[in-house]
Length: 99
Image (cartoon, rainbow, N blue to C red; front, side):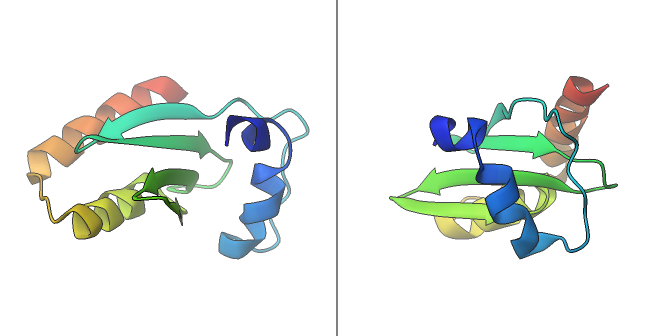
């Protein structure tokens, strides 16, 4: 996955989520966070509230167009739930990476 990240992952999956968006020539690298025990990789893009996220869960590759979307999907897949405060805290820590 990291090899694909560094090559064409963004241009390959971006059209699945967002149309008519131009990618910057020099994309930053994907970053990571852990959500309910599941590693997630993400890349912030130049659109408000949008990011490209992926996780591997039980040998399935999951893509979402926002961290919030990934939170919902992983909670559904794992059957685990987290508090609203936990999600807000995680979002705040992710936002620190992009400022």
